Image (cartoon, rainbow, N blue to C red):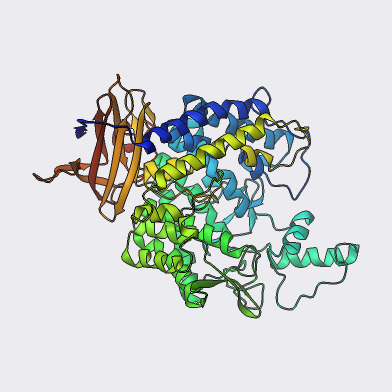
Length: 600
């Protein structure tokens, strides 16, 4: 492994001090949160019996969803250990107390909510790829969607469809729970076809209720929908553990199917595929109206997130940028039908029987993720166009929680327009940790009856600034995404992932074939070594290294997915690293795992 050494004494930059203080603050807060809300053994202090349909299992997992990611960035050993313990404890609770999981996997929910569950599971591989039980789970969970278990026929390989919008470890659900029927109709998440007229007081009269339920089962519950693309990162997680080509092949097969449908439908991704693989089969040919689809209240967020995480995962495991076209075509379609008002681009957020409607600014996360993955001028231009008329919004730095989706100001920092961003976002995240811990300490409600979302609202583990500043990637898409960092870090002395003690990192610039970053060792007595990985999953390759902007000779040649940096006490170093992207097999493996396979 190529090694470089810093030699420049540091006058500690403010961002470096703030970054380490944020890590310290989260390390202090995490045990307080866990001790407040969990019983011995780790289960959440909540109701003895599950409150019934209409409450999703994801809300329990979301209490700790970003703990393994935080550990992988450099958080305490405690958060790494507890992230595993709590995943196991919540899974037991959902299985044995509430009956919402079977064989350690959610029985039958939709993949908008399942994606919120399993973002937690995917990050556990970043924290420890040698956990064989997690690897076996990744294989089993993926197998539920690859016809490897005859009792779980979620997938039709001939038609390349997932057979229902609700699926899981018991197979596809074709008859909906009534609470889901009522919830999804009343909140506008689906329609029942072009000719169905809802009777008055339909959920108050048994005969009318039954008529609606039967139509829902026939029209909504049979066939594939866009949010099922959330399964793709699940299968990718098994590939990242094992390198087994069958997982890559399934991803190619399923994502290609959606690309084909999008192309055949004039560049519009259809939101419902019938049980025989036909677009609009249950809706008289209409490509809109499906579950969490184009007519839905939050279609832009739900479909956009599913398309984004699937495109990123397919790109990751294949190295083929063609899969980014799934997302790019979707965004270009919205822009094609956009209108301008007050200098701002407003795209349609819905398509109903009356055509394109609900014009509003585009959700920024999908186009930011597309640009981060492609680094093309075309995708950068799209960001600039979306920013027009909203310079203030794209430069705002506020105190935000762990579910924050706003990477806009980070892109302005990389563009050179917001040089104080690192300090501002670190301060904002510190304030949010403190605010949330205050809420935990002052929480005197009956925990057994509290709202199921409360844990999410006070979880003090905030990874926003650490992801953006240290890895040079946008935040992971909350609905089932995989990490998108350009670099990651390992502590060779302690044989663990993340920044070593006292070390701070800042990615300052990105382009298609290089990354520029600064490393600082704040210790005045200890030398720190840190290993840089090219990509969150080692999918890139370092090609060269230049130190402190030196221009008096050629850059040092490197041909490796890793680079070691030695930081004597009180020093810092600026690095410009050449990089060939998406040229290595993506893996959860650490640098010391031979051939990128953690299991032997």
